[in-house]
Length: 134
Image (cartoon, rainbow, N blue to C red; front, side, top):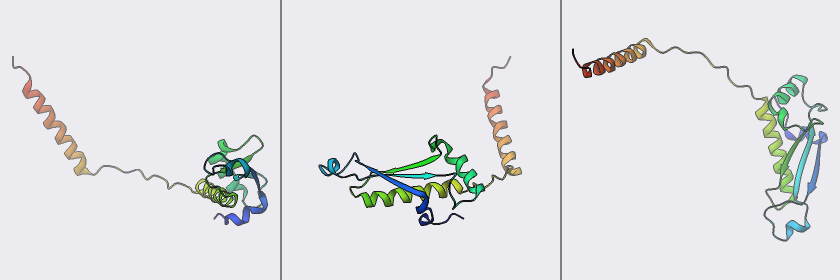
């Protein structure tokens, strides 16, 4: 089970910058874009098994140094963008730790097989009746 997002706060660093998008003149003055940075392998919150699972699922999103970056610039407020980045980060971890249910192989029922073969036979007879008789 994954701990709440608050458990990761000591391991997370935030970096702000000027955002593109909504805000008008505000965009040119305020650093509302928030970039969340988290180092997967240095995490004390997760077990080694959980780290391996996350690495397998989101390994392509990690930087060369092993940092996971989550960016939020949707809102005009830096505080709101920080909350959005944290929520996205937690959702990413939850999704990457979820294991898919194993698929159970099934067989078609006997009646379904019989109906399919009868349909093929009828189609074959229909086409055979169109042939010229010699």
